[in-house]
Length: 190
View 1 (cartoon, rainbow, N blue to C red):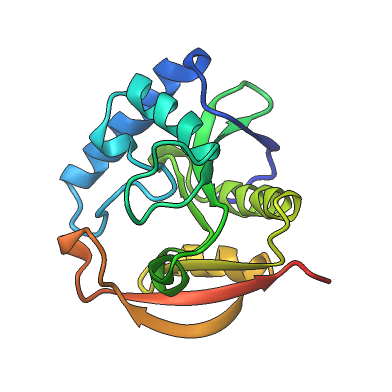
View 2 (view 1 turned 120 degrees about the vertical axis):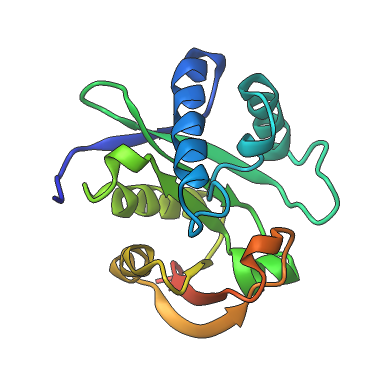
């Protein structure tokens, strides 16, 4: 059931540790019961770190500090429902593309809490993230999704995404090997 409930994007801070831990737990619980879910899209390395480590890393990466090989500067946001300040999703805006990100990952990655899906949050999050891209001077935004993720493909298309073909996954998550990604461009230069 799609709802029109407003959200805002905020930077992750220690104020939100409990909600971020709960978000992570929900994803890990879902992942353990689902072969389809292979990572936590739009969450950076949250799956592999404590929340405190993750918040520090997000801050560093937004300024281009302590980037591992192959990483680019990226700003991590958490999506908060305005009515009750509940964390409903996460979205990451990468400031530029590497060859891998151009092929598969894109400028933006996002996810919605398992219990908050089908409420229109993803479209709002992507719309707000595109505003962040404009602020960064990114005129053409690459966004991708796994072929089977029809909901994400519709979100991207609803936000102006123009289909640009498919690419086979060749990244660090072996469980995604061979998966096909849909690739889209969203033109912000208008």
